[in-house]
Amino acid sequence: MNADIIIHVESLTKKFGDFVAVDNISFDVRKGEIFGFLGANGAGKTTAIRMLSGLLQPSGGKASVMGYDVYTQSEKIKAGIGYMSQRFSLYDDLTVIENMKFYGGIYGLSKNDLNHKIQEVIGILKIDEFKNQLVKSLPLGWKQKLAFSISILHNPALVFLDEPTGGVDPVTRREFWELIMNSAHQGTTIFVTTHYMDEAEYCNTVSIMVDGRIDAMNTPQELKKQFNSQDIHSIFVNLARQSTRKEFE
Amino acid sequence: MGQFWIFVRKEMWHILRDKQTLFVLLGMPISQILIFGFALSNEVKNSKIAILDHSKDLTTQQLIKRIESSKYFEITDYLSHSSEIEESFKKGDIKLAIIFSPDFEKNLYHSHEASVQFIADGTDPNVGTTLVNYGSAIIRDYQDELLGEKKLPYQIKPEVRMIYNEQLNASYNFVPGVMAMVLLLVCSLMTSVAIVREKELGTMEVLLASPLNPFFVVISKSIPYLFISIFNILSILFLSYFILEVPIRGSVFLLIAESILFIITSLSLGLFVSSIAKTQTSAMFGTLIGLFMPTLMFSGFMFPIDNMPVPMQILSNIIPSKWFFIIVKSIMIKGLGYMSIWKETLILVLFTILMIFISVKKFNKRLDIE
Image (cartoon, rainbow over all chains, first blue to last red; front, side, top):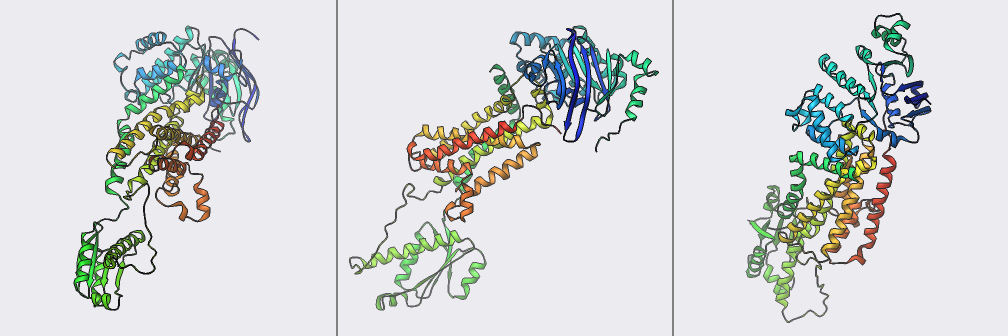
């Protein structure tokens, strides 16, 4: 296997009873890239991310993350990745600093490193005035940026972001992506799901999921050429129309 | 291990931030003890009664005086006709009517047989029976005095003593009961709600994606409640010893050790509930209906288990509070030592191990979604 590959997936499948949530997907993610996972609600993005981050046992296929097997070495994977779930994952009744201390602590950061990191995040996000306030008093955009900063507090080589910009206004989304790209520049591999098609342009590789399958995967430029289209949005709409899966069936 | 304490510290932050809940958790046992000690009581004192004296002679006067001076009775109505008895009951004031037959004294000394009738309000059977017993005892005492030296040729006289609780102090029964109730509430309810809250908020997902051992997540949640519960035991014991004058006849250390065992049992029940419940509401109803109600009904604290139908008696055996109730009563009130309660202790230990085992099995390391 190529040393540049950080995630290797081959025919990965997840079934819940008769329902095939993820259907035989294969792809590679290179070190340091931003890998975008696009798809409508219910396409299987979250299920795929949960299998790769060691939260969910696959039903079939092969997958390795940072060289560790998802079936048998999920503990090692967990220690090396960052994870930001699609639901808001900070504690509302704790302060900004307390949230950072807690999450940094469970990833085993030493007191010195942690304090250093906390100062760094406060500087980058410019939240010095909020640092001792309860998280619930922050606007949603700040919360999401903070959640992202916390998910990479322990300098993981790879971070999974599951719809990190859901419900956030366009300006904050822009700022959020600056944070992501900044972190990618420093060498962190980003695996991100989204259903905002404009965000696909930020990614090095885009894969489009429909009904649990990956129907298209390439760089944004190549995808546009391949489908002879102006933007990712229309490619996505064309592919998603073929979906036979209704969300609540 | 460091991560474990980081998690415990975070739980402390949660609890300290929520001042109202903390206040309730620490204040509840104190208020329970005071309410049960001073307001709610099974003892029958100062019951209002009516007297109907058809005879009005010296003997009945003396008997009435004795009844009046007893702390159990307060004579509110002096009736003059039998028709007034029912009216008096209907007004709802009196619990007992005592009727002396006409020519009471005459009959007593001439035909050696006088009759007195007790009519008690049976709507609360326990109170009715108790009042009749108290009244009969007063009459019996008077009769014994009349006999004086003259003994009846044949007489069987029961000599009654209420051992362990000579004054029939109701606190002896409810202090162990309140301990079981409070510990169960604090440990099971709060732990299960705290764990399920993380599931509901979505933070559990992030915790499970971290290198933290999932079992640590749930165990560390229970640590703060362990400390709160130990404080609760001490405050209950302190109040009941110094204010309600309930003795601690056995070893205090044994009592505290057994209480800690029961705390761990309750925590394991909380874990069990949280491994099933998906929302905070269902965790709350689960603990209240599944654990708290059975504790009230089947621990022997409110209703005697021996009076229940056999299936219920068998059912009561799976209620851990029942065994804790027996243990606390044995140590505190009877002053028994380890040798007398090892069976009950063993049951609690096995029960706890079983609960933890099932919870760990159910608490999937991987996320149970969809």
